[in-house]
Length: 169
Image 1 (cartoon, rainbow, N blue to C red):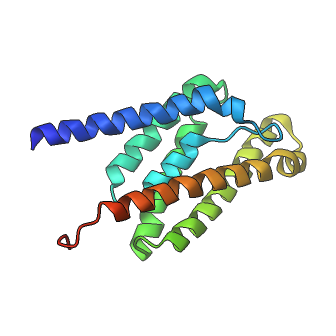
Image 2 (tube, one colour):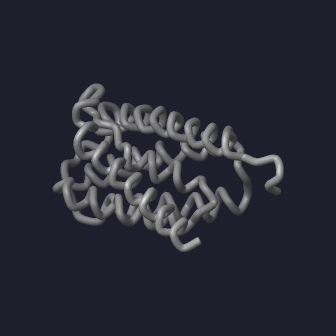
């Protein structure tokens, strides 16, 4: 049993490291209209729909701190956003619904929209031009992140259905 627990933690650590490397190395090469996708945000959002609250909080904290350390922006913004996503999904989604792909997609749509708008708002506090940021980058970031989130959610849903047992209740 102990070996299985350690193996689970190692797999999760490797997965988080892979997502960070994907974000850090490949996201800039996948720019669309000048906007890079945020794989780490989409991963935290997808993991938050799982019923493992500790893993989603740890993932949000670790990926947030890692992205804050390499982004060059105000330290703590990614960490706060990611922790709010993990906490919000846990409190609002899991208390009302359970494993419904359509509802998860709608929650993801809302969270991606709020993430893009709030990030544009915080950037506009330093640069100004909130409406310009919304019209030029935030909506593209919203769509890009939502499409990536849907792909991750679909893979997670298919994986969970594949490993479901008839004998497990």
